Amino acid sequence: MWSGPRTLSTALMRSFGSRADTVVVDEPLYAFYLQRTGLEHPGRTEILATQATDWRSVVAGLTTAPLPTGTRVHYQKHMTHHLLDEVDRSCLAGLRHAHLIREPRSLVASYARVRAEPTLADLGLVQQVELYERFGGPVLDAADLRRDPEGALRALCAALDLGWDPAMLSWAAGPRPTDGVWARYWYASVEASTGFRPPGHDAAAGGAEAATEPLPPPLARLVEVCQPLFERLRTARLTIHTPVEG
Image (cartoon, rainbow, N blue to C red; front, side, top):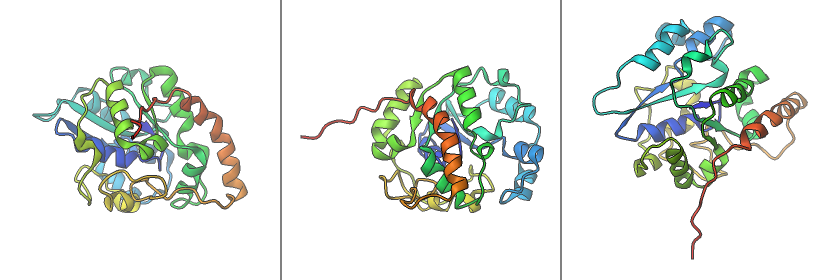
């Protein structure tokens, strides 16, 4: 599952982690990304100490290691901006790819609350379009996931040839042993959640909804740059069939 930050990605990992047949892994290329870029992210020292920094060994583990007994789905939560140019994309060809997207204004406003001056490279939209055009795969809009969790998850499972599991709609609050060590910097809202919440409630959203006030000019310009990339992916988003009541 490829996404940028602040896109409901951790909540969606919680959802798949609620399936009895699934094991999840949280951003396995994060340490590689930090080491190569030298960026100062919250928890950098801990991340570098707890994850492999060689992308080849990471990808080998993701594509060849056997699954735990009783599971058949390996859900990999990936941040698209972690996929730096040196990573050989052909090594990923054997995986099933899916994409989670979020409207740029909400995305940028949410991310800026944690890191004040985000750039296009922080958001990974360029890599996400590249991955989609190379590998395809279903595209899920976070707005659809919030509006109709069951419809969106059913559509995603169908697109991935997975059976529907209603356990995906809820989870216990709190941290998980599968969360990365960066969770204490980023996951407070998800740890307080027990399921997907509708628009206007941010506990499972990975950040609050965008405010109605104008964004500062640098962030507004970033939104303008992101918008055509988002639209390229949005045109391929899953159609969600919401039952009509009454």
